[in-house]
Structure formats: C-alpha cells, structure tokens
Length: 217
Ligand code: ZN
Image 1: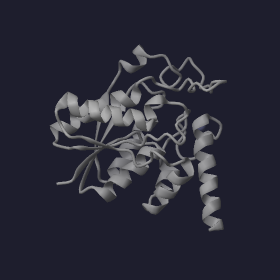
Image 2: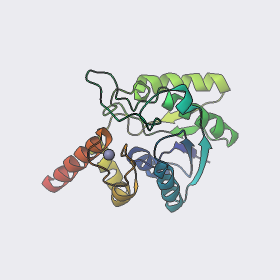
Image 3: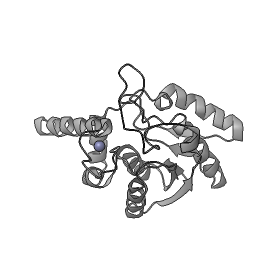
C-alpha cells in the first residue's frame, strides 16, 4: 500500500499538502507538534481539518523547543519583527523543520510509511534555511542512513510562490476550507488573520494575486 505521513500544522501550506497527499496516496496520516507556539488555536485548527479530511492526526509534545531557542513564535514577551537586512525574521525557530521531519521519520518507520510530506518551500521561504531544497535533499539522505530505510521526502510546494499555492488548493477543491479555516497568522487569528503580520501579508498578497489572475484568465 502506498502510504504517506504529512507533517501538519493547521496552516495554509500544510493543509494544501494534506489534500495533495490524499490525492496522491492510498493512505494518509498526519503528525503535528506542540512546541510551545504562541497560539494553540493552530493545533485546534489542525485537529478540526484533519477530522474533516478523515486523516488520523497524532500530536506530540516538543516542550523543550521554547527552552533551547529564543524566538518570537514561542516567547510571548517578544514582538514579531522582520529583520532589517537579509536575516530571517525573529519568528524563526532554529532547526524546527529538521526536528519535525526527523520525528516524523521515526514515527513513519514504526508504521511502515516511507513517504513523508512537508509544506516547506523556498520561493517564499522568508530566509528560513531549513525550508530550502538543498536542506531537504540532505536530510532525506541522512534519515535514510540513520534508520537504514528508504524514505522519500515530498515537497509539493518547494518551488511555488503563495499565489501558486492558492491555485493548488483551488485545484484540489479546498480553496474555501484553506481560506476560512487554516491559521497562518502570527497572532493566531483564523482565516484572513490580522492582516498586519509578515505571514498574513504574504498569505493575503498571494490570495489577491491568485484571485486577480483567475478573474483575468
Ligand atoms: Zn497576522
């Protein structure tokens, strides 16, 4: 059986990936992490959408993340800020994707799942180094070696900008679900979000561009 595990967060990208996985694999499960992110509404959204998609979701605690790293996603005392130069914004949780994918791989092997799906991409990657294709290819090889298992990490959004991610959700028939029920906002506001944070701006700019191209086309 063609099985896949989606690294899930309840956000736009991973929700699009969840439905992409459902289309491309016979059996799909999801994994999510509670890592002290400010807004547990993310995990609530994740649970609701996974239930609607009829995908089994397992949530693990990674409490130590907020202790080992200092960033505005897990520290309520910090404000979300973009950096002035080319550095990533202070929402960066160092190594997050590496850890998530590593735990996902360990979990996947116990279930004889070889396909792991993540919504990372480098088109709109905001300078997060572990969203880059080079990193994913490297980690894939490392995971295979570390567990003597033939994993394939799938990154369906790797080369897509946000406009194209909206198109993919629309093509998969989940445009409204992604628009209204996912959480991407750094302030934890569902759907359209606060409209002001970097994540909302990126998401909404992509949405406006997508709707415009759809109407023009
Ligand atoms: Zn926002």
